[in-house]
Image (tube, rainbow, N blue to C red; front, top):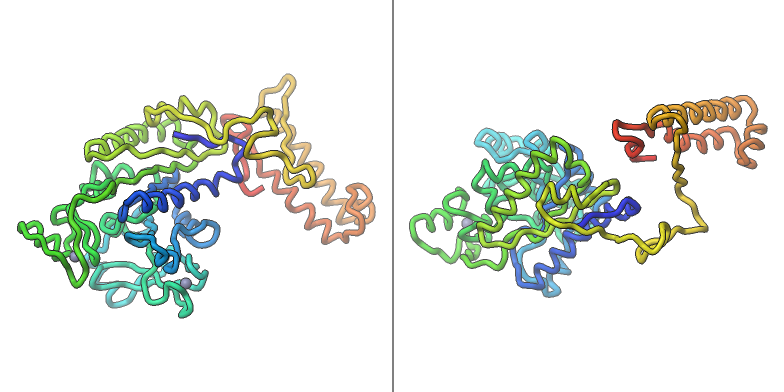
Length: 406
Ligand SMILES: [Zn+2]
Ligand SMILES: [Zn+2]
C-alpha cells in the first residue's frame, strides 16, 4: 500500500491514471490477455465524475488500433464505469430493451463525449443483439471508425467484458456479497466468448456457448467468434487504486474496511494474489495507521521526503515563477477557528477596499497595488482570482479543506 505525500497534490491526479496504464501494458507483457488490470475507486457518489474523467482531463487508457497492431496481443484495452444505478443502468431490463430498441439510447447515458483516439465527436447507440449501450466515434477518419469504442457503462457489461480499467465508486465493492457475477472480475469464470464475453455458469444468458457448457458441451465458437476455456492466465485485477484515501475515515472507513479485507479474502479464495493497493491522497495524516485500519497492510509513502523541506529527488521549487504562496497562521491566544475567521475578515476588508478603489480611482489603485498601466476592467479581472481565496474556510478539523479551484 502506497500513499502520496501532501506536496504532490498536482502530480497526484496524473499518477492516479499512470499506474493503471502502466499496469495494463505490463499485464500484456507477462501474458495476461484478458481481464481487469486496475480497479480505480473514488470515495464519493459523483454522477458527473465518469463523464468528466473520460472526456477531457483524463488521459484515456486506450491504445490506438495501430498500437494494437504493433504486437500487443489479447483483448482491446477497455474502460468500464461501475457507478450507481442513478447514473447508468445496472442492467438492460426487458422494458429498457424494448424502449432502447424503439427509441434509441437516452442521451443521459452517454459517458464519453470526445473520442479517446482522435478527440472527434461521439454518439451512443444500442446493439439489440448484445443488449449493449455502445459509444461510436463519428469521425470517418478516426483510427477506430467502424467499431464501437471500448467503453462499458452497465454493471452487466462489466461482468461479461471485464474491462482493463474499471472506474468505480467505493460503495460498489459491496456487490461482492450481493451479486455472484461480481466474482467474474476476480477471475472466477468458465469461458470467454469472442462475441459475448466472459461467463460463469449460465450467468451470460445471451451466449449460446455458455448455455451449451451448462449442458456439458464445449463448443469452440459462438456466433462466429472463438470461445476460450480455462485455465486463463491471472485474470484477477493486479491493482486497486483508491483515490482520495483520506476520505475513507470515520464511519465510511469503518464500514469500508470490512469490504476491503473481504475483497482480499475473495481473491485469495479464488487462488489469485491479493491486489496491490495504491492510495492517492494529498492531505493524509498518519497514513500508516489509516492503511492498517483499512487494509490490514503495511504502507509506504511515495514520493518519500527529501533531505530538506523543499528538496527531493522528485521535486524542487521553481524560483523564477511562483504559482502559489502558502501562509501558515498561528492564532496567538485564539483557537484555530476564530484565528482563521479573523484572517478571512481582514482579507475580505482588503478585497473590498481594493474593489472600491478600482471603481472610484483606477489611477490611485494602480499606484497602490503596483499594477502599472492596467485599466479599471483589467484591474477588476486581476482582482477576481484573488477574491476566490474567500472560499477557503476552516472545517471541523482545522484549515485543510477549502476551495479546490483556487
Ligand atoms: Zn475517433
Ligand atoms: Zn457467446
